[in-house]
Image (cartoon, rainbow, N blue to C red):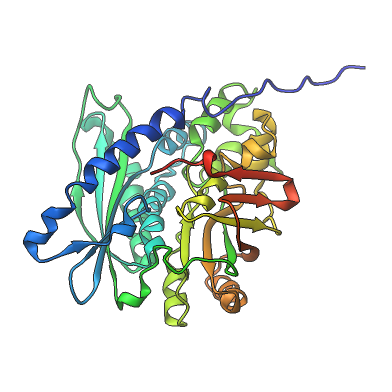
Length: 372
């Protein structure tokens, strides 16, 4: 009786991403950047110091706060390119949404309303723009994502960087500026504390983090990106499900008078991002969202146990809102009214800094996430 051998384990580090090497540079950059905050005084402004190390930087300009962020897409465009070769269709409308989501979903964590998005599309050569269908899909998808988020597309840069970007490829990034108005909408964790509820918002799949791992897995699948992860759904198509844009939810919460005490965009580092705030608190998860088929498939094929899978991928939760317990159910209802599934998934408790995911028997401590 024959059987298929279990796949050899594949870590995120083996796929080319080692946060132990990346994070020290981030910390060093943060410290150098903090020393420049005094420059704002010459303009009559000041920084919100608590935003240092958060997903967006906040400046106090008097009557309101300004928030800003820049983010790149990463390697998801490589999957789109290969799927275009295999299927004959462009996937760049979704890729555009992914890129904008990387910036906007970070910006809104501090309570900001996104105002303006700028584009950075760096191609490996002018030839990239010859594919009119692909280029127009990128433009159309970018415009549509801006409309969903109610932001203006201010402009951008489209350099041809032969010798820096590989020929036939494109590096995509977006910056976003937003406003926190009224100032009471600011959410940098000062009110975060024991008794708060943790509401998780559903992801659409892998979003734009963990693609290095997914691409490495595709190389060893007999049918590559065309391998089915669910009936009628290929691995490549599942990976290219556009990242959810969460700003309609945060704007609707503001209109309902609900100001989160803290928010976390669940991107790189997976669920460890729930530990992002520096306060010593224990986050206890009692409800785990359903895992999208593509993420379950990746975890299985990579040989990841629950601890490794949830520390790498979003595993079905793309955004976390820490709200007053009395607002938790209403937060879920507002998310669902905006087309996004949500769960009251846990609570914040007094205790050492750690995340306890009870249904999985997994615990992460302060040492598992070092971003400052």
